[in-house]
Image (cartoon, rainbow, N blue to C red; front, side, top):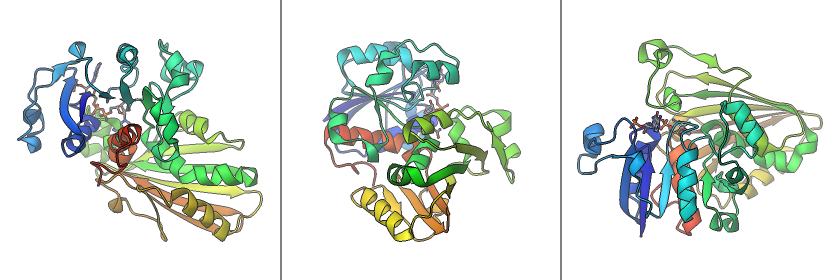
Length: 330
Ligand SMILES: NC(=O)c1ccc[n+]([C@@H]2O[C@H](COP(=O)([O-])OP(=O)(O)OC[C@H]3O[C@@H](n4cnc5c(N)ncnc54)[C@H](OP(=O)(O)O)[C@@H]3O)[C@@H](O)[C@H]2O)c1
């Protein structure tokens, strides 16, 4: 049985981690840590968990004897803590962007921060669960949980890019996210009155998830992604348009996607464009593709807080410890 620590338990992804951990049969002890919420009772903060009596402790007083640590902190805040935890070779799963990029220079540029534990950028495992081999998990100390947009995008594009890269001219992704993607601390532009009945693009050509996606795609063709906010609480919907220089037969593409995902519990190939409603509150990623001449359109969606964050983090823990991949998640 595992003892786990959730650091950043008061936030949106922290709350999802707590809910999953409470029903996970291999977790027997949960400790919670927070910043401004330290000292508060968790069930006062989240009354829907009224039977769970736990006080949020201050991050400064982390118990270093636990088996697994989930960090659900704003980016740049995980580095120092991971540096301390890693010394005792724990399983550390970081939901922030602090360990996702492989290059210190790129991290410093994108996050305007000097990465002080850059040696871990090269030894960490990038935890896109469906694409990590089990032997890699076993020697991982730091698992960098992918971003929400990278998760839905990479699951949609990697089978195509890995098999037909030389036939791709360019790819453009247009993605839509619910407002919980920005975390619990609301700003005026994310408030209900601003977003209800509204939609808008944001971080055009500058979104921090683009370098992460390109790092994992290893694309030798132009790629762009444009994010939009949707007037919903949760969920990400992405439409990927692929421009080919040579047509790919539907059957060949289908074979590649079916064989990539046939053993994967959380990716569902769909015969029609999926709907957000099919994946909300689940760890599933639903994908459909349509082919016409030299164009392919792939549509896909996930719940940003589950498959895009906490669900995938638990899936990574399950894979790391050799548990059933779906434990706590179905
Ligand atoms: N939201 C998503 O859809 C999503 C998806 C994938 C990845 N992520 C990533 O996951 C991480 C957590 O996201 P979230 O949406 O859960 O954020 P959130 O709701 O804003 O929660 C942030 C957490 O970090 C703590 N915190 C805030 N400022 C801090 C500081 N200066 N030092 C230490 N701790 C601090 C907060 O503690 P107090 O409340 O106690 O102050 C809270 O527990 C982020 O890095 C985010 O990019 C989020």
